[in-house]
Amino acid sequence: MSAPAEEGAPAGEGASAEAAVPAGEGAPRRPAAHERLGAVALYFGHRAIASLVVATPLSVLAADLVGGYPRGDAILFDPGGLMLTELGRLAAVAAASLTAQLGLGALVAAALGLVPLAVLLAALTQGGPLSAQTVGARAARALGPLTLLWGVALAAQVAAAALVLLPGMQLCAELLVLPRTRDIAAIAVAAVALVPVAAIGLLHDLARVALVDDQRGFHAAASRGLATLQAAPLAAAWAWAWRGALAVVALACGAWAIHLAGVGTGPRVAAAFAAQLAALAVAAYLRASWLAAALRLSDRGALTHERTPRGAVATAPDDAAR
Image (cartoon, rainbow, N blue to C red; front, side, top):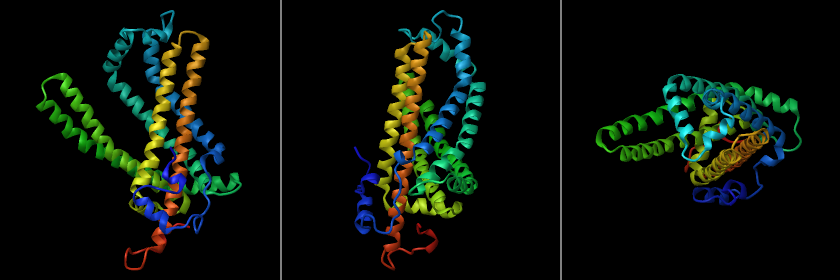
C-alpha cells in the first residue's frame, strides 16, 4: 500500500489540505529516500554499530552460559527452550546491572545517533544535487536544537508512560489474583501506555523535520510540527504507522532467520549476521522514507495554513514553511 503522504491523496483531514493546495504549486520538490541512499547508508551504519554495542552485555551473558558447549548458541533454540529459559533466569538475577548497562548504552547510542539523523534530514530537505559542505553545515546548525528537542521528547515519553504504567500495574497487582489473568492485564496496560508514547514520537519527528528544514529554534520547530499534526492527523499517523509496522516485521524476520540458522557453525553465523543486517537496513530505509513523507506533510500543512481565509485561523508569518 502506498502512504497518503507519498501519493498526494491523504486520508481524513489530509484530504482537505490536498484540495486546498494544488500539486506542485508553492511547495518545494522533496527528494525521496531512494534518492539519498548515501545519507541512508550513514544512518544505517550507525544503527548497526549501535545495535551491536548495546547488545554486547546480553551477548556476554549468553556466551558465559553456552560458550562451552560444542554447538554454542544453537542450543538456545532447541525444542523445549530449556537453555533459553535458564538464560532468562540468569538475566533476571542480573537484571539491575543489565538494565543499567543496556539503558546507558541505548541512551548514549541515541544521543550519538542525532549526528547521522541530522545529516539524513539535511539531505532530505535539499532538492537536486547535494554538496557535502552544504549538508554538513545544515546538519551542524541543527544539532543543538535537535538535542534539546530529543531531551524534551524523551522526558515527555517517560512521564507519559509512567502515568499509565504505575497506576495500571498497581491495579493489576491488587485486583487480580490469578497469575495468568494478571499477566494478560499487564500486557494490556503496557499496550495502552504505548499510545501516548507513540503520539509524542510522531510529533517529535514532525518537529525534527521542521527544525532542520527551517533552520530555526526549538519553539518554532515544535509549533510547526504541532500545526502539521493538527492539519492532517490521520495522514501523518498512517504514514508513520505502516512504515513502523513493516520495520517491526523486518526485524522479526531477521530474528527468525537467526533461529533457522541455528548459529552453530561459521557459515550459519555469517548467514544469521547477514540476515540481521538486512533487517536493520530495511528498517533504516523505512525510517528515512517516513522522514521524507513527514517533510511533504509539513510543506502541505504550511501551505494550507498560509491560504486559510483571514479570521478562520490566526497565521504567524514565522510559522510558515519556506
